[in-house]
Image (cartoon, rainbow, N blue to C red):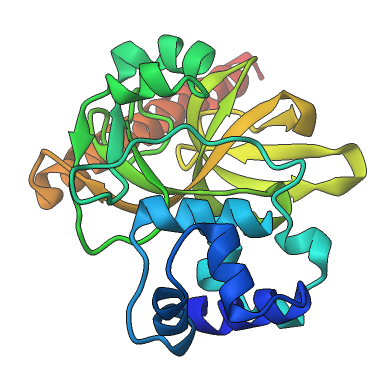
Amino acid sequence: MFLAQNLRFLRQKMEYSQAQAADKIGIPRTTLGDYERGHTEPDMALLIKIAKAYEVQIEALLTRKMDKLSWDEVSSKNVKILAMTIDQKEKGNIELVRTKAAAGYLDNFQDPEFVSELPRLHFPALQGFYRAFEIEGDSMLPMEPGSIVICKYVERLNEIKNDEPYIVVSQRDGVVYKRLQLNPAQQALICISDNIQYPVFQLNYEDVREVWEYHAHLAFTEPKTSFENWNEDRMGDIQKKVTELHKHYIGKSEGN
């Protein structure tokens, strides 16, 4: 966490006194002083106010050394708005998007009222913006259908790490869980399934609405059983292909 260091850097960059910065944020000067020294940390509601006052991304404020970055990398301008809710302790909730709500989420993901009606999970140790998604289908086996994937919000596409798993929300494909690769030459994301039976496809950057990076998941089957079921299915597919090849070559030899 680089919050204290970044708060000092931003205030000095803006050439504010501590009193001026505190007034702009709307907090007492002594409170800002405690934040800058790292003695205490603001809650989620106040983090939002601080980021808005300085016009920077919250993720950058918390997790990146701003004095080592260009202003374009930390500025909140041209960054998509994330709808979220906070609990009674002013901590960010983790809203759960069930498969039956995926279509509605695509149309309303920036609507705070819609997001506030989603079911919520609570993981007090997580800092930042997280959301949970229920997985549908078998394209990412051995991750089983019905598993809940907990993900961290990605503010910029250039923050995507190649070959890591992400939830992608797009107008064309809805909510999908895939491994991603950046394709800057074609301004697209390459989407790859862990299940090789599913084809690779591309999504244009302009079609992407949200990206969430995998952090953890909740499975509802015993892991060994889950893997064995997946392994049996794969062995069945392999055996089927071997049988087809066998019939093909037997047929050719009999024809000769």
